[in-house]
Image 1: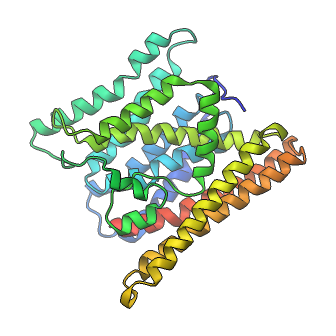
Image 2: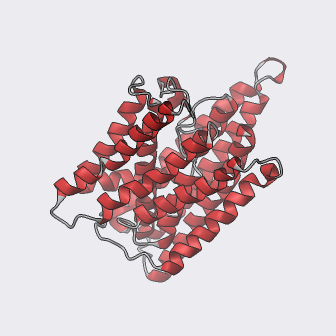
Image 3: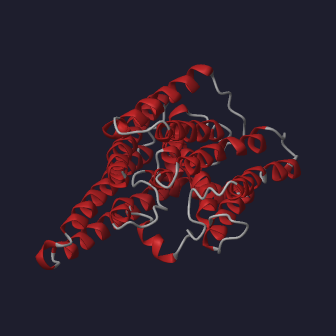
Length: 345
């Protein structure tokens, strides 16, 4: 599979449809708390929609399929990290929501062959983050502690965000089913040698591990990496749909990885159930739910594998693939996001 490098035309109808679904989902997530919201807290809904729509628009640079871009936006705007970040202060959520839009000039502006201009424009989000925290410090506003950064211990929740939120850890991971698309997208990225995208994502991770400087909370840099991976998920979803007979080994490998993650979750759940006086029961239940989602993802990828092996890749069969994969991702986001929002409120 290859990553498409073309500028997809964003129709108003598709943009409006995506915005409408994002808005409806945001209302669903925060509906139990809406009656207790003050005016500022309504920004939680606006931020989630803006973040999702921004990633949707940005991903259209590489993703031609509507549903690929739609779920890329949903994974970013309603993902564990963005929801967790918004829990600190609405202003931080607004900053995260603007990051995808700030990358759009670099993605859509320079034409092919103008890598230097694109690289310079890619600095814009970094500058805005710097300006945001300098302005906040000037007005004595600290929307997120400047000591908040990424630790190695936080990576334990990378693949199990539901357990991480229950243990009050930093939510630096993704949902379960999109992991399959991210693996596929990453393999396509390596094959296409998109070094610029990899460099931007790596810089975000490195800065998130560093100590604070210039009053900037280091964890905010991870937003850039999460955004990059969300776009990769959109690319990977499209790659899974278009995967042919020659890609069957990748599909089988992804399914096996998902089954291993499911097995690991079940084994950990067993250990938590064995804890004294049932103190680990709540973690065990979350791990079982995590395992179920990975099994769901493995089944979806497995079905696509058998389709690819049977060389069923006409437009009709691609539509079947979209239905299977989209339903799996939607179920995962719908259930997991609800759990995370309830835990954070």
